[in-house]
Structure formats: structure tokens, C-alpha cells
Image (cartoon, rainbow, N blue to C red; front, side, top):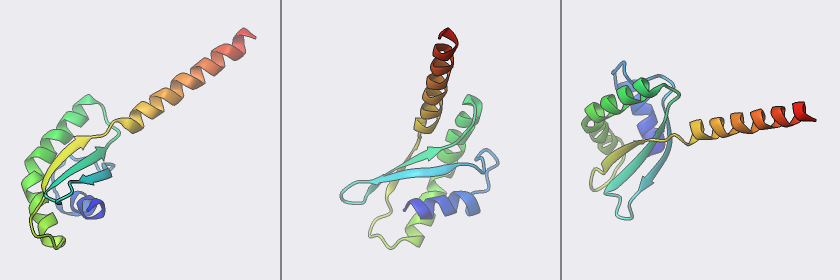
Length: 108
């Protein structure tokens, strides 16, 4: 599912608001496969993330239809898209750790 949605976003959705560097990080499916939560990662400012949310919302019907055609499932899953900010939070945490280490080394 993750691979299929990645391909659809990269090759088939023609919305300029979706950056080329948008990644499908994870897909969580419900037990009955009727719902999918798709986590997207993108390095963008807040405006870029808002544009991505709007573009994905606009294209969600197309993406769902394409997924149902490419994957042999009894029911096309209802897809919910979520912007995953864990990579940015991790990068920010690493920056804070580096700053703390630098400050400690200058005090000594």
C-alpha cells in the first residue's frame, strides 16, 4: 500500500502543491482493511505543509480510486492522510543537543 501510494503521488497526481520530496513514511491499515491512515513526510515551511494538506484533500478521491484499481481488495479503503512531523522534530532535537554540547564545551 505504501509503495502504491508513493507511486501515485510521484507519477500520477499532477498538483504543483505536492512537493517532489513528499514521502509516504507509513501506512496503518485497519483489521478489516477498510480504513488506511497514510503518514506523509515533507520538508517544507508551514505554508508548504498547508498547501500539501489542501492538495492531498483535493486528490484523495483520485488516489483512492487508483489504489483500488492497483490492489485487489474487496473494498476500496477510506484513506486518511496525516502530515508526519517526527523527522522534523528529530532534527530539531539533534540541533538542540548539538547546541548544548557546544555550550558545555565552551564553559570548560
